[in-house]
Length: 344
Image (tube, rainbow, N blue to C red; front, side, top):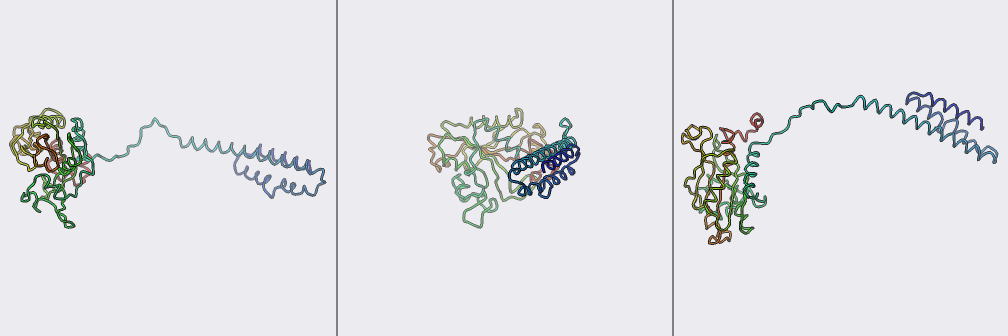
């Protein structure tokens, strides 16, 4: 039996040495190592041998089995390495080749403008208001009452403001000033914040107006805040936003929540002040409203107007974007025309 085992070993080693593909190797593994192999059958016949021969023959069959298995596994790893190298060679990538262009999304001009305005005012020391202070669905108390807007004011009419039918005195906010009121209620001066967001007005949609648009409002409350501070901040904003010094003018106006109030114009971007259809031949374009915070607004949020003063301003984002990028129709911002968006 010993000679038979050694013969099986020599045959197996010779076949393994000559094998050149995985399929043939699998056949050798099955031939010499499976349950039905000749070597395994010899192991089963150990019980029929004399007791003194069993240890020697048993050790020999186990040794031969392990050697054959080791060589088969070694050959298997060689074949695997060869196949892997072939695959890597065929699938290799030349990283020096130019990449394939993948189209990317564009930042919407409204988002771009809000981000730019926010960055400028942050440079001027203003902080962005918290989201929880700036709800779009608001009560009349925060949208009108605390902003010194009287009950009979035309802005409170259903022709100007969207009222909810689900609850009494609930509106879609008509300005982001509600965020300023909530900020003043929840903090002590000094307060220096901006509040960007969507606002809603019951207006007919046209090239110049929409019933949904975006605002950025600002508020600064502290001791000894003067109108000159307001002018300095807004003039610096205009310089930074339009990229160069541009003539401005402050015109008297009226807003219920500021006194005195002013509207701010810049020299027409289109004609340089000479007069054109865009500026109605005046040479000026209105960009925002502003003024000193009315003492009644400060009292309503428990800030003493004898100690503190402040200024506020509000600007339409679409208006500023239209002026900067020479856009003549506000509806272009909302039509989702990819040809328009791709220009930005």
